[in-house]
Image (cartoon, rainbow, N blue to C red; front, side, top):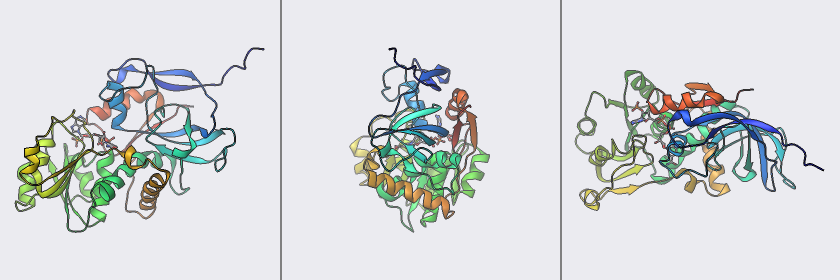
Length: 333
Ligand code: NDP
């Protein structure tokens, strides 16, 4: 007898690498979850700059065509054979692996899904999982920010930037943020930035020297890359940390060892996935994030929502620096 026809759902598919326009809204066949897997009906999907890197080929893309996206919140619709601890109807979120969240339904390993506390709505959870866990890892594990530290955050009004500033400020650090516009400066100030530098009008290195009385900062969180890394090195105090965690403006050039030697600097290039590789690390990071949302340390800025079918517009806006805070895609029904 012929096999039963597979259920279908719609997803964004990338058939060739390129600009936002390569993302197409298409029907795909729905897989059943295998052992250890669950299937979720997505309710809110987080947009992250990493989705742009894969779409453009900055990071080696999976086989074409592929469904982009690495963060979603959803309701469990099916569980794999023998799976315990998860049931149909559970609300869960994931961030990181696997790719494929720009879809009405997605299959994932149950081990990457974490329960979403009922006090956090789905859009908020999709705004804060990947970006918030990144902030946790950067501020608590890659470099441990403490009261008295001075911290420089580039793209301070961005998705990760907004959370970094709020959290660093709550930890007692003096926070300096860079932004491109007045509106973003206002948001960064509300998010706990003690000093905001509008890099479109002011020289970042000069301003940081003024603010720190020539000493420099203990740590720079640099997600902009090519356009900022040189200034980031110059802004550091003796024995400071350059945490390069992204390249929104392009890959930075190699940094000569002699640039680090001049101030005994540290350089690290962390990835969230390596810091949430075990279930314990994942639950710790997600737990810290949701606890800080619940206790008000983190205000979740869901500044932009788009229908999933219009993901291309979300990417175009993200890449042209039009957005602030988080971007969420809502699956079309
Ligand atoms: P953002 O919301 O921060 O968006 C990017 C922002 O970067 C823009 O709004 C803009 O702010 C600034 N920017 C400066 N130059 C450029 C440029 N040439 N093109 C585009 N934007 C530019 O995005 P996300 O919060 O999603 O991600 C922030 C960064 O963090 C990304 O680089 C991402 O890859 C990285 N990341 C890394 C992780 C890791 O594990 N290593 C995990 C998560 C995120 P402004 O207008 O103020 O200049």
